[in-house]
Image (cartoon, rainbow, N blue to C red; front, side, top):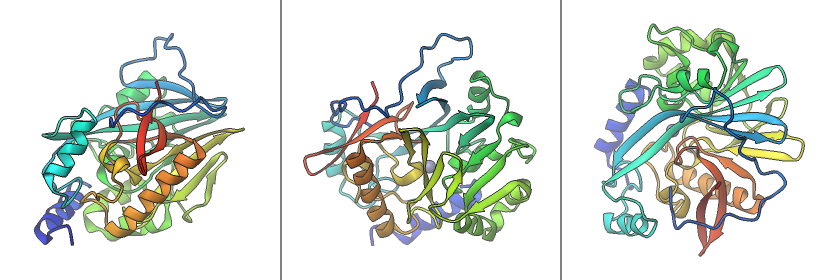
Length: 315
Ligand SMILES: [Zn+2]
């Protein structure tokens, strides 16, 4: 048991209430045919919070929402691991050892007539310095009402916080909201989520874990973090992108030491096994990965090194 009951209680409260990278720099692997390529920032709709790229023929953009900072105290990330071990890992990666920073970012994909958004950021959640998603979306040339499909990896507040506005209204008023059936069931079962459930229920389409959820979008069940946590694979022809959700949180700790759990994993042993399996899948396939929490823009690859993995950000 690496998580004390009080700590867990605090976290559960935090989740229920508000809700709720480098590594030894890896050399980037040889470019694969399916790799996204940055699009020249030559339009007025580009800002520091919008990173445009392509998935095959699809226009895509990472939308920066903000950051979450947590103390490196063994209570949130690398739960129960001696601090000296965590510090040594971070130091080798050139990272500070006092505070751990997680980016918060969503993924926008334009596919024909459809405008797809993967996760919605933290909104006004107090635990994050975030809430820039709508501005980033507009900077990318999209009004919230133009989003046709929102795909939710899981119902923690840094992923669903942007679904509703200050008055509790649905921000993406014309979008179908896709999330897995077990995640939707769990969300509805928590009384603290009643307002969110009421706002989005008319537009929710729950999918079976692992289902093809839209043309070119397949859910990937990654069990353990929440009851129905899902990654998403986005394809266009031979091009593929794997949006990993919260299969991994920190680009050094979670990738190089996948067994060092985060306190928000609902079923830590299962989440650890899922994290390792997803990292192996990503490394062995060479797929381009998009992470909502790795340093902005959170695009890169997972590479095997020294019996474990490292994050290789796209250059
Ligand atoms: Zn998260």
